[in-house]
Image 1: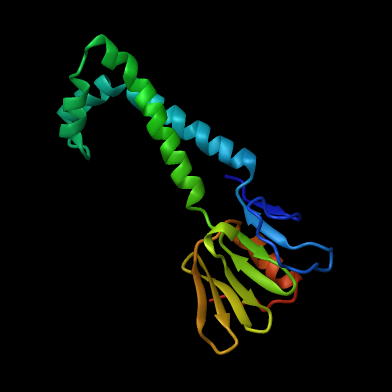
Image 2 (image 1 turned 90 degrees about the vertical axis):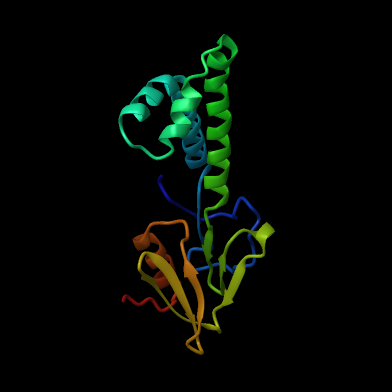
Length: 178
């Protein structure tokens, strides 16, 4: 999905960063279009799996695939109401998967005075400029060190690596590479 850098308030209400040189903080989160695409893809995959379950069951009978026995047994139900219900059940399971995916993303807000990682309703990690030392990517995960050299955060965040690095450096935060 296309990661977005927003220059407005975070949709989940994360606030507290002062204005930067251009008057805003850099906010990296999934946009509404991203959430819609994730939802549409997950629901479409769920419907397709529900529709093509009999074909997948015969494939599972011939080749060793994960959960092949379960898929094979589920595909043997051929009552009319089950055939009609399978795509709907797949759509519901796809919607649940989309919710899990979008809720599990970690927003990032880089302001002049502090860095916020996480959603406001989930007690985000706040790192003040005075306690900040360095940020960098290590093994694909954003790592932030404090002035005392302790690791304040290491994990995934929304945003492309180069955009996140630019958000830190453009606000005067130290950025290092390993």
